[in-house]
Length: 146
Image (cartoon, rainbow, N blue to C red):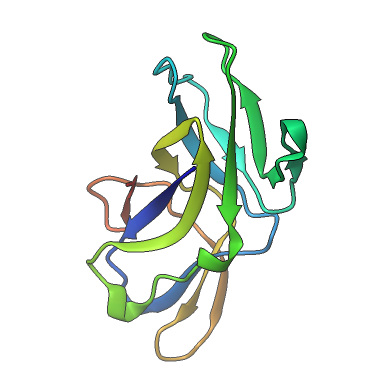
């Protein structure tokens, strides 16, 4: 098993505590098969609320998938205790927001979609629908898996 951290970097203006909202938050990833190197074109998501048993009673994972190219069964699990917020003091630096335990998969890209929240830096005003869809080179942030 290998652990991968999703690192997040953003320029925050007047907000703090950028975080995924709820256990049903969907982490949209591009996943590479560790056996054959196949990277499907479609985004796949993992979430804490989904729990799939692994073959042979070896525990569970957030997602189990069979590679379409080599037919190998791979899995990825969200390590819930590693989920953390990106705060004003993290501004313009990379910070690991979540870690994934991977068996036969490697996350190679992340697409932030709906479900992020933040708070006003000075007022604490909650913002429950933060849009982070503009990734690389934008004011709203840049993300990558490492």
